[in-house]
Amino acid sequence: MATLKAFKGLRPPQEIVKDLASRPYDVLNSAEARIEAEGNPYSLLHIIKPEIDLPEGTDLYSRQVYDKARENFEHFKNKGWLVPDKEDYLYIYAQTMFGKTQYGIVGCASVDDYMNNVIKKHELTRPDKEEDRMKHVRVTNANMEPVFFSYPAMAGIDEIVADFVKNNAPVYDFTGSDEVGHHFWVIKDKTIIERIIALFDTLPSTYVADGHHRTAAAALVGNEKRKANPNHTGNEEYNFFLAVHFPDNQLTIIDYNRVVKDLNGNSVEEFLNKLEKGFQLEEKGMNIYKPAKLHEFSMYLEGRWYSLTARENTYDDNDPIGVLDVTILTNQVLEPILGIEDLRRSKRIDFVGGIRGLGELQKRVDSGEMKVAFALYPVSMKQLIDIADSGKIMPPKTTWFEPKLRSGLVVHELD
Image (tube, rainbow, N blue to C red; front, side, top):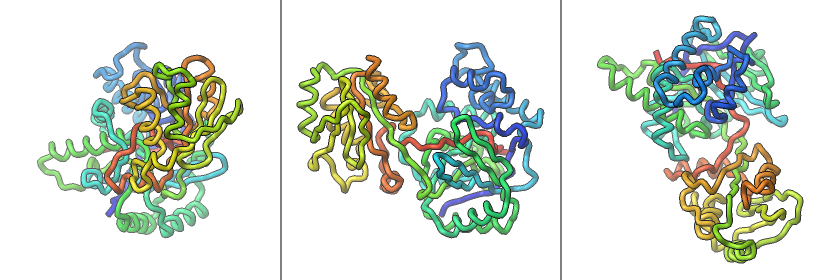
């Protein structure tokens, strides 16, 4: 059964929360982080991207960077920019984008649940990225950023959240530069907290939606700490890590598209002829064309958009991985025709989140940087859960969740 734990969060004062809250560490590079935090001493980027306070060119994985994270975290606490709550609370974090609001429960997930696969994953993690986040957790002794979880929607939880939101004003309520609204409530009533925790205890599983590396790092550091503590009881704070849990029926996965630098030695005519084997092709002209259903792709090549519909014998609807459009595209186009055998390492392919729009694909091809672009129909939450339940792993760069969580609304210390 899924564990949810209340905790004493560290939170910013209302008057600086909009300046302190930042985008997650992994959605912007160091140069972008420097620009975003420039002139803003409150930005959490000073802790989660601490290289911005060191000379340009500093090795991102040097001890100096991690030490700077710890130094900046202590500075934030000393300045009163992150203040501990008095008791163990749960929190509600809601986000509004394009007129739609999703409501998440903020609490601590369990290291044991991660190790025992009660928390289910759908992506592989890279050891180097895991170790980077583990070092960050070790030196700060905190989960500075929440991970993004989902759970099978439950009417009882929905009712509690709706009633609480209706009858209580948010402690934070602001709109970010990306026009996404962020709303945050503190649940102090112990009866409500206990009811939510009891309902979570009836869930067979929760699911990592976004943040697999942060999840792994948080759980592995917690496991390290328990092994190092001869008086370990299982109740210590390091046995838990910060997560926002959203019901699956409120989440939106958007398309995650591909652009490729060349046609692997094929002429345009040869390439189109080879595509005919696995797809029904239809030229759509010069206007952007977006795929309308599963197993339909759109392609931009030589100033023209095409519809590509996968032929029925090219996929297996009974295989949770084989039915994915990313699998079909890889097996029918990227590997056999374009010669891209390792999506994680190939320098000939790049991935573009659908939040940028299909115009970004056209732009990158028209500029000459890329030769061809493919737009995919988004993966569904059902597909994600089916794959996680089956114990299988999605291909890389399959899901793109929007909106992204803001970091810094609440922080979890491990002691």
